[in-house]
Image 1: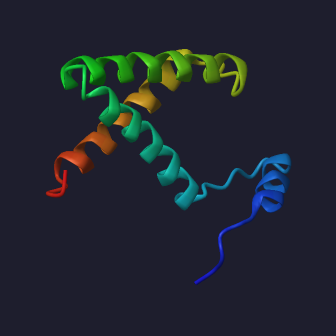
Image 2 (image 1 turned 30 degrees about the horizontal axis):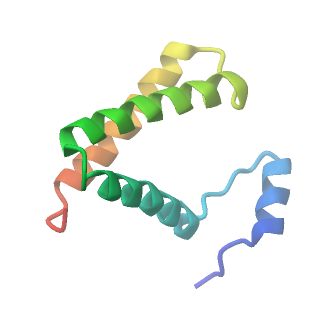
Image 3 (image 1 turned 45 degrees about the vertical axis):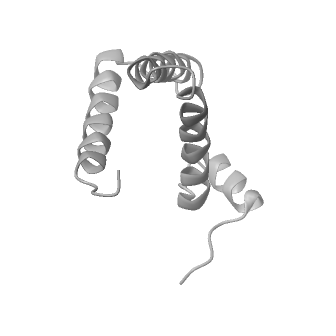
Length: 98
């Protein structure tokens, strides 16, 4: 099994235009957001939290699209993001551990 790229290697890959997804770091980051939701759920309904997360994700993704990725075709970006979300949601709904 190959070792995941370290920070220096990831930065070099980004500089060359080849973004690599560090699966371990990605899942740890996602877990941090889930932890926030679980903490908030002690005082706030889950139905309110999930809408706040959707709003925040849309807001942050709009920022990234406009200022980081600089997408030319906003509708194409929206379709790609919506497709990614649908696939992730389907996978999680099919997961018996959720």
